[in-house]
Amino acid sequence: MAEIEQSPPNATVAAADKFPNVSFSIWPPTDRTREAVKNRLIETLSSPSILSKRYGTVSREEAVEAAKLIEQEAFELAGNAVSADDDGIEILQVYSKEISKRMLDTVKARSGDSAVAPEPAPATDEPHKAEEEDAGHPRRRRARKTESVADDE
Image (tube, rainbow, N blue to C red; front, side, top):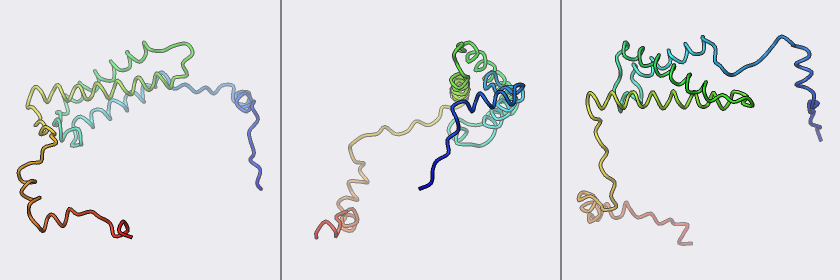
């Protein structure tokens, strides 16, 4: 049997000794990362997507302004949530969730201002009239039969 080689428990300490000038920080994001987030927001808001199919697209100019505001507010809110024992992962999750939430709020508010999205038909347990008529048709009754040959054995 092959033995699994495990790194010694002090591997992270040894790596830190080898590279004392290297540090890894997940929060706060660099300006380059924040700019990339804003560019992605602009693209998402102003391009055809699943989001735009439901709420409509936003003009490029509006998307630029909205992206700046969304990212800035999310960054500030996440920055206020920093704790001393946080490794940055939780704060990054807060930042990401806030961006998503605010982007959705923005498109919903905008679609409410311009045109109301069509509401889905209410779900009911009652069959529609067309379904009732189909159920009475002999050919369709046979198609609905789902018994398996294996069940008969």
